[in-house]
Image (tube, rainbow, N blue to C red; front, side, top):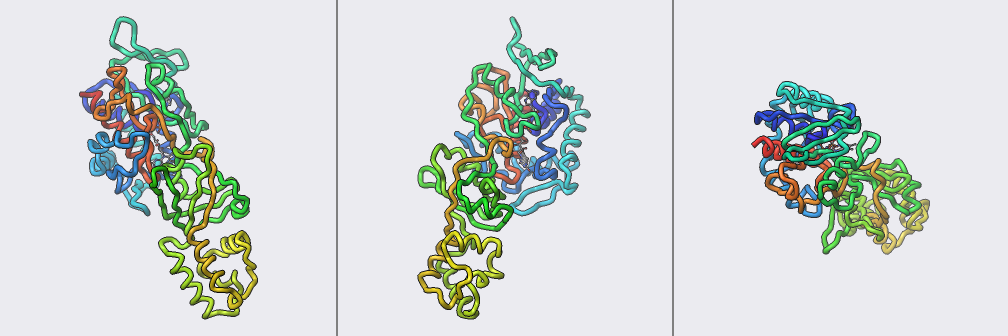
Amino acid sequence: MVGGGAAGMIAAIVAAEAGERVTLLEGSGKLGRKILISGNGRCNLTNKAADDLRHYHGTHPRFVRSALEQFRLDETLAFFTDLGVEFREEKRQRLFPVSDQAQSVVDLLADRMRYLGVRVETNAKVVDMRRAFASSHFELHDAEGQCYTGARVILASGGISLARLGADRSGMDLAVGLGHRLTDLKPGLVPLISPEKYVARMQGLKVRVEVRVALKGGREAVDTDDLLFAKYGVSGFAILNLSARLVPELGTKRAVLRVNFFPGRSPEAISQLLKERWQRHPHRSLELSFAGLLSSKLVRPLLDHLGFDAAQRVNQLSKGARWQLAQSLTNWPIAVSGPRPFDYAEVTIGGVRTEDINPDTLESFLVPSLYFAGEMVDIHADLGGFNFQWAWASGVLAGRRLGS
Ligand SMILES: Cc1cc2nc3c(=O)[nH]c(=O)nc-3n(C[C@H](O)[C@H](O)[C@H](O)COP(=O)(O)OP(=O)(O)OC[C@H]3O[C@@H](n4cnc5c(N)ncnc54)[C@H](O)[C@@H]3O)c2cc1C
């Protein structure tokens, strides 16, 4: 097993349960470093909607079907419950351990590996892998010059985001060295950069909004959740989640996010609402007329940006002005030019091309007895526990096939 993250550990457990003698090689000094920082240290380890294939993306998103169907949500919960994890559901059907500690997930997976006799080698970064001369075995060499051999190998070395945790291309390079192709790699579940000056001026402000963005082929991505204005652009749950579908399409062209500051409500409804509020309190300034409705930190910059006088009394405003406001606040354009770098990304978009891997077994089409699992494959998923679900399900499938 190359990689001691989510996919590698669960694959090791499943293969060892099937009676295989398993060695797990982890490049860093610790197992499961991304699990430890996931979900703000609480590990959002799956989602109640994990079986819904629409949450998974990649050049060929249907590639996930077989793995996800062979390790569905109920089996995932049963596996972790058996390990000792109790679950709590939070907003957007996200499931966390009730301990609120990602460490407990890593500890329980590590304990299970120990119990099953999995040999775990940390600080063993594999830098070279080849078929041994005159044998069907693989030879793997780590950066310290240690050599390991195995009849079958699972590559589960993860994505390349967060270099400070030791993530790099070394695992993907092993796959390339054996003839596999990679797609372009891009940061995913990542804040977006905006060239709009007023966005930077609103940095620190978090609001609940509905965001829409047009995708290729007349499709549209929509999310309703937090939007955080930042110095470089926009972040927050809604933005991070949309980035999974938008970033693959962002080339040199900018995209425009359409923000509704009144989620689920139409411009007509907002115009009517403003009319009623303005009739009730005609003496109020335009800015004060939004008090209790929108954050004051939001109202002033938006009015300034639209060229409205925030101090003007609402009884002096025309019907046309009210309609312009209602339309703008329900369909506010924010241009975005691209994702922030990999150091800010939760996942890597892209990876080993799925055309080179059998979806039913996760075995390479090019190199028999070599399997792939987890984020290093050209699959990424929505925010909310779906990336771990892919890591668990693909790790289990590869581990089962290796052990069969
Ligand atoms: C800040 C952050 C928060 C996240 N929160 C969540 C969340 O709450 N829910 C969710 O579903 N997803 C979350 N994710 C995504 C999730 O962590 C990953 O999708 C998941 O960890 C992928 O599992 P993996 O086993 O494929 O890769 P990884 O977990 O990255 O594991 C790969 C392992 O392989 C090792 N390795 C790499 N190269 C080599 C080599 N050459 N030799 C030996 N070992 C090597 C690495 O050191 C690493 O330990 C988060 C990610 C980040 C960065």
